[in-house]
Image 1 (cartoon, rainbow, N blue to C red):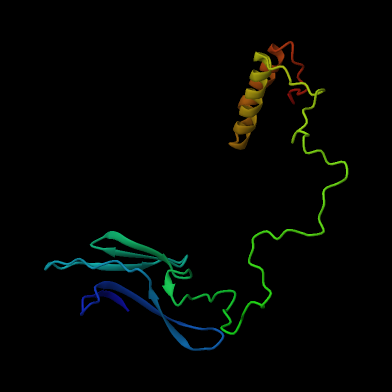
Image 2 (tube, rainbow, N blue to C red):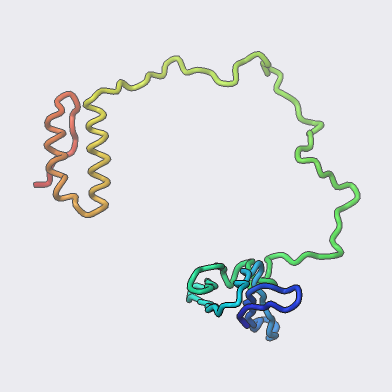
Length: 180
């Protein structure tokens, strides 16, 4: 069922569809949650429901999209696909259940050689930062462009240019050789 409903306290555009439950074989009506409001004037209006093969729904009023929904999502009540877990009304927490996010372990202890004054991170004194030069930046840029352009299928145009650039950078040895 589809269309505007302006009866009594109801003032919405209904979209209701029936679906046969494959398990039980019963037909169930699924109602759109939060439907759009109909136009409230004395003029005629065109209400359109479009259902796409990917199970999406669009409701249009006078050609203007008012609502988009997924037929298989929680946009409908009841949902077409039932929840993975069914709430058990008789399910209760045990009497000794602890709701704290973190529960301290009474048997946990710090190691004997634990130092509270030690820094959280130890700086590596032997680590060296690589030297950044113009030549290394150019090489990195051309390498990036080569891979980017090769993804678009224009590798044969830019490969010789890349090889030529490697030859221009004398302080940076280039291990790539031209296949030509």
